Image (cartoon, rainbow, N blue to C red; front, side, top):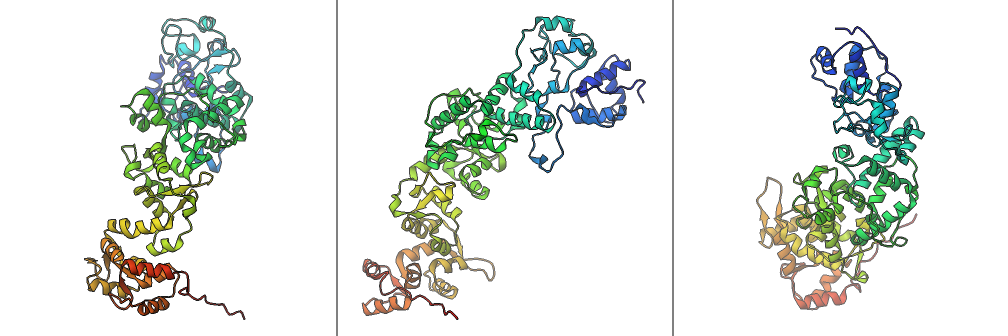
Length: 557
């Protein structure tokens, strides 16, 4: 069924305002009747999504470009996947300036944007409810007269409103156009997340922000100040240094992570981009910025429902999701997922995995402070003991997991950029842990790994298993598995000269010769000796002396 009367949209008219005018022009007594007669197979109403309403209008009216209803122009670029988009920024209920509606019978599509809270032309705050308390509805009275409940005209409603100068963020928006407006709104919404919870570690849930019951004027004003006001930005840095003082163990990036993540997400150049805080130039002060008692993430809000208001606020401040933890510490996402499963640093989210998983970072920080007890003189950087990693077929990530699982003593350099770079270990402590606790808790070790750990050929590993010194586990055909506990027991009871020589860069032949001359006899000939204090003292007295391997000289042609 075709409409009797067709209309053209007016500049910056909202899609819902246009549908109301279209309904009135075709003598429908309500917008609902228009939808009922022309909806087709799809249920639709005035509060449906903008996309659904645009499709509906295109079928009724010949409009070549429906982008005329968009409040801002967003260019089609390859980076659209990183964009928030218009949808989360817009309300479906009427936001109106009574003075504007008294002058022309349509609503501006930009009024529907949550951060646009005022009309700069008339210096009035946009209204969602009439003075009588009734919420405005998308009907003919809204455009043509005023309130459909108390029947006050727009002129009368405007007369009752107090003049309010439009906030700076609204004025800034109207000074821009095109893509710059889109960038500005996305930056402002990003900053609104920080205005909602200034000290939080996580930075997601922006699309859920409109569902929060907030005063958009106050929230947007604070967000704009956090982008442009030096005093507010500096107060934020000082208060972060106080609120997140425990994070100093991991350096400036961890302490000022909320500010750093804000800077990373901004499209335009703001004053806040020029601020580079560090632990050296920012003193901790209690000039706290206003914050709310909730986040835009339901899972995070649910995790603190049983806590007092103060305890909930503190917990929310320190909650961190996997992506955020990876960014803050420089860990890979794979390592982050493993850390989140450590019992003492367990996830707070019931889902327990993926991007929905998050932890209370104070658990991780407290454990890091506790194990940061090793004298730096006894340590080497975590990335240095490559021979030990090669022996146990492990990576730096595996070492970090062992450190935090068993709270091994380390030294943390807070000036480092990443967690891996920050950690230094006592190689003897790590080696002893791997040879004992680690192996005892590893149910099965592959033949290849057993060969590397013992530093002997595969056939000799199998020979030890046949002799009962090691325990071979039942496994599939052509696959040999050795019990980790039996390897730990072997290393505790025996000294394998092949292994000792490999770990101490000594010549196996020279070591065996010296042992035979000193009267030591192999318990399992020719290279496995019973571990005794006398043997250990003899080996340690000779290490790094005449037993050193001779270097292979290169022949230069």
